Each structure stands twice: as structure tokens, then as C-alpha cells.
Image (cartoon, rainbow, N blue to C red; front, top):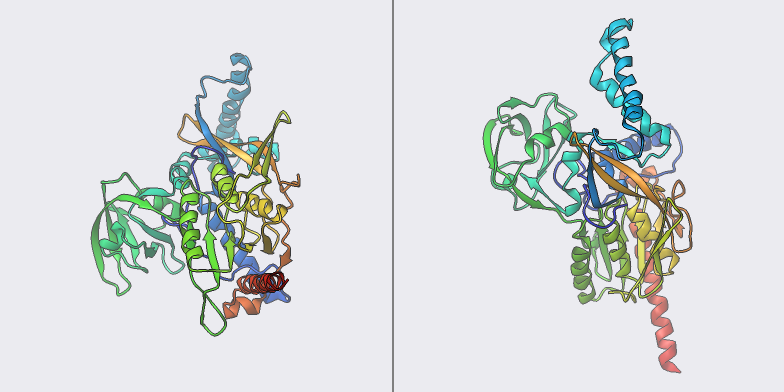
Length: 456
């Protein structure tokens, strides 16, 4: 989870510049036969990779308000410097022995072994949420929880059909769109350097840059023509909260139920959500769906603010630090506390999205529909390192209002709805359908109760 001031953050899905859009039916956890299992396995891997690309920090609510740079030359752990040097210089001795004696010298790559040694430190902790972030990845994710980044405004991904990065789509009203970048374009060169064989992250690192600076892209369009395009980077704002009009089985608009998708919790999420809720309430909806499927988390303070919008009282979350001290976040008067509410979650809803679901579920404010969530119950703190990388350290556990532990367990839905292979092939979002049915039933019951009360 993220806490208070602003950490680095999650990147985007296919790639570089935008957050995930509202999910379509993707990840059934059930099914029978070899084909469904293979399909679901592939989907799970792809989404897992997506979350990592997003900035695997997405799952980690971070405590960034006291981001500190740690210098290797100034250990602050209380150990005598001589002992520290003796302990860690032995790694250099081991590397020297391997470089001179190991039977397969091609395997002795100093940079790789150095990274492996760092990984070993964190592996020994047994905490998947404490981790080292290398400088390139940290630079890539450093602005994402702000809800904006500096770049050209296009999403990219590795092409399955070539060795070049492909444009998924330019974002509306961005420098990429204005310059004529199109979905399906291949990026052949960036500033004169061949992009052949680049990973998605490499492309994002090269294309992003300070606002007002140019980047030159050699593009191959879908018709085979090539074009050299110079784009002036700008600040690109990305919405973490979006809405759309749902459709029924006959492709008619559903106007009585409001739908809101939260892709992650950034510092702009409460403001974005407030505006959308006001618009939906003005349209006269009788219920709301909050969709946090594929939401990997985000900033802690903003997550609690979102939960607080739907509560007038009650505990939102309990943090327990390493000393056993508790910090309790409680609700104040909310913004929308009368409309029936459903939260949609899935196996990839993690951290902040789990906090939101648990807070509203256990305060009897929302019904959770979907599948059990990911199960990430730690609060993390970012410490920047002298090499430009960072360490994310779990500094607290968080508990639900009823003091349930989420780590490794997740939020259990009130109504479990899984996708089948047939649902995926038919592109049916059965979880949304069940949510609409539930909310309409709740509205009908409320109307009957109101009529009975007025007749007395």
C-alpha cells in the first residue's frame, strides 16, 4: 500500500503511458478440461507480466512521505564500519575467485551476480513485498502515482510478429496523436538508435523524457511506409478513475446503474471519483458498481479517502507496525452513503483495492462480487539508494475493520462469480451482469419497503 505522500508508482499495461481501461472478461479461475486450463494459464501469466510492467509497485502500498536516500558509505544500522566492510568485501573476494577459477567463465558476469546477491538478501526475508528496484525500473515508475508523467502519450508493447515495439494506441489530445502516431505503428528507431530487440521497458525509458524536449521516432506504419517523426514531449495526465455506460444482453444502455472503474489509487483518484459520482447521482442512478478488478493498489491516504466517501462512520483500516503499535483510520461523513453499492474484484485485485473492498464489506456498506482477491496485506516504505535504485520495505501490516488478516488470504466475496471459458469466448462479463441484477433487486426491495411505509 502507499501511504501518505507520494511514492513511485505503477506503470501501465501494455506499456508506457496509460492506465488500464475497464477490464473485459478475462480471468476465470475455474473450468474443466485441458483447453480451459491452458487458456487460463496463459491469461494469468499475461496479467502477471502486466502487473509487473505496471510497476510491480502497484501491488505495494508505499509509505513515501519520508523517502530517504541511503548512502552505502554511511551505514545507519549501528554496526561498526569495520564489521560491515569485512562482511561485504567478502562478496568481492568470492567474485574474484569465481572469475579466476570457475570452470565456465562465461557464466561469471559481475553485474548479474551482484544482482543475484541482492536478490538473495530479500529472498532470505521471506517477504515478497520487500524488494530491490534497479535504477532503470525505478526511474520508469517514479512519477506514476502522481497520475501524470512526462512523455509522448502513447501505449506500446512488444510485438508478437516482429522484433520491434508496436504502438497500441496514441492517447487522445497528446503529442503522439498530434504528430500522427497510429495504432499498429512499429517503432524502428529512437533518436537514431535501432529499437530492434528492445523490451517494452527499454522503449518506455528511451521515449519518456522531460516536458518540452524532443524525441525522434522512425515509424513503420501498417501500410509498410516509413516516416521519421519528431515529437515534443509534454506532461501526460492519466485518469485512474473512469466510467462508461453499461449495455444489457440486447445492447441497450443500462441507465439505472452507475459503473465506475478504478485502475489504481493515485493522488488524483479522490478528486476524479468525486466528479464522476456527482455526474452519476445527477443522472438518477439507483445503484453503483465500483470495479477494482486488475487494480494492483496505490497510495494509502488516497485509498482511505476513497473508502471514506462511502462511509459516515466506522473503521476503515488498522495498521500495526513492527513494535505492535496500532494506527486506526476511521470514517467521517461520507459523500454517497445511501445508494446500494457493489464492488467487483478478482484474483488480481491487490493491496489498496483489497483495503477498499474489506472496509466497505465489513462496514456493511457494499456487497463484494467476483473471486477472492490477491492477498497483499502490508504497508511499504520506499528508500532511495545512492545508485538511483530503491528499496521497498514492508514497515507495517494492515488489518480490516474486523481485524482480519488479508496477507495470503485476500478478501472473500459475498457472491462468488467465476468466468467460464464460454463466457470469455462470448465476451460476456458475467460479474457485471450479476452486479446489475443484485442492485436492481436491492432497488426493487427498497421501493416495496418505501411503499409499505407510506401506506401505514
